[in-house]
Length: 470
Ligand code: SAM
Ligand code: SF4
Image (cartoon, rainbow, N blue to C red; front, side):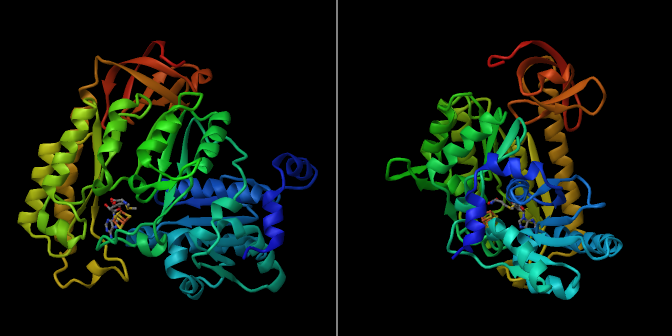
């Protein structure tokens, strides 16, 4: 059960609370976010909760009243960074006379719980991803009791029902979490343990949130989920929808926002979803579809439950449905038992599919996962060699994909200021960053841009006319 006082605070209307907070001194909260887009989305929702409790966002921990580390546990390096950051923050907390509240949220909090306090006893609050709506109550409890607060259980209540509506603009390109958790249990992955079982939000709640994001200025919405292609939620009028049906409903909303979704699992990409790519112009022709390995032996050891051929056939069907579809993927090198031959098969897959972009990772053993217990671990040196090789091929493919656009025109949605003065930054349909010279007043609009140059990770060009929705 949720503490009633929290429930009532969260249900209070935004406008009346804005009036209240206008007359009092705002406290400052800084959230440092690691990891995936889902963490970025969660950080935004924590700020919404805290805004109702008199906290305003600050970009720096220096002088903040509260600092929250929203953490990632996916690889060892990511979680170790949290502890080195905590070491730095400890000094700031001491300088504040102990007043600065330090909270650790996200997957490291979920996985390590009270062990965080053993390593960093100056931390005040440890909270798992399912408990963010209770944050104000945890702050109050910490102040009352003087003891550190740990909340990492998977609650019966659904946090989304208790989180307040978004109160601040989420930018031109906004995230919307539709699904959390994962039941797939890939051998190497901590997500099923840190984020819990797969859960889909109801369609009606998602549509309300999408309308709100559009009203706040979003022109592109990316649906998020650890396994977003497995989304199947309650339909607004009974029954249930799958992701393709949800995408169709979102595409019909006024505002004509661009749509994306991430991250998909190849096994869940069914015909209906492929047809949505064929039928919905608002669904961007860029899909992140992790494959992890090109070797059937390693895919089986990873418990991915698809073969390399399944993946290739799926890509063919997607490209038939939407001819200009560009793909990105995730690869892991050095999963236990991966031989040179297995690695060669991954390189073959990369050459035959050709990706616009890909993320390559060295396998990182995660405590409690089945792969960490396998006997034949690949040496760090060999993982490093394979990673470099794979990254070299990915760089070549990405450079070719980018240079192929030179001389063409593209619809670009401008999302923010560019690196240099007088520049603005946008996104192509294929997720490429595009720099142009232009006024900030164009941010939020879509224009047609003539691409003049390709750089390793971006494009640059000239606006030639209004985009079809500008
Ligand atoms: N759900 C997605 C899927 O099925 O592919 C991926 C989610 S995971 C947060 C993002 C990526 O991190 C994975 O695709 C995988 O490549 C990588 N990853 C996960 N666990 C890893 C590990 N133990 N070592 C290295 N990379 C890992
Ligand atoms: Fe992790 Fe994705 Fe596998 Fe789920 S499907 S266990 S999130 S890699």
